[in-house]
Length: 332
Image (cartoon, rainbow, N blue to C red; front, side, top):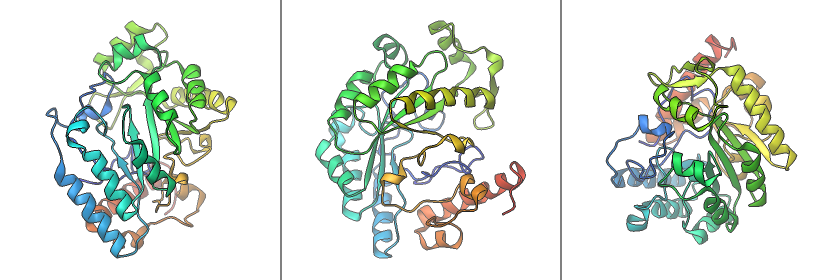
């Protein structure tokens, strides 16, 4: 429940594999949302997940283990309208504060608890990530009609005293207004941009082509090994567009990184923003390629962690090692 499922597309690249999903689905229902393939349709509270998070947090504290950071959350928006009634995300944040467990908070919402978030951030226990794919109101109303307007997200985040990262996710080729998004993020006090190019099914590709004549033709996209008929751009196309975003980010003084990609040389900082947090960090393909394991938690050290997270993290490491050997020819 607390560990993202291992896969060759995630395990070699991602530092943040732990998550707390307070709700079972998301009322924002954005057109492009990748998480729709992984979660249920019925929007319900997931109190058992929060209870398990509290149990694991307490165990790490008792054992005096450096805690891994958890995502709040990865499959749903933690501050969607249902949060106003049940406040489960707020409960997660209070647990994290109590047991000193860092959170990577990712949202499209506004109106979340500013004081609690700033309290966490002041103790190196929170990073705020705000997701944008487009910034124009017309495009937003087409692709994410139930979410707050992009400018509202940036305006609210501007008031927050915390490390702030702009997630350009998904970056929709020919649709996302990259330069304007980056400039607005800088103006709102963001420090960092994370980019991840769109992956979606063929049906939705027709939507993006109707929106923009610059959306790439189908031959640019390949079936993903991740989920059935999902399409993802070819590596050379992804690299080219990431290089463009990095140039624009650096031009205005923002750090840049890619998400779940092998293009490590593009990253100017840790891709998840963990350099802002006091947390344990797993190894990825980057560390294997560089031979640098200092200050990382791996191997037998993972066995010290509660089974609810340690077992899953060890499985991710096995997938990482297999990919490193078979695809990248790295001896491990």
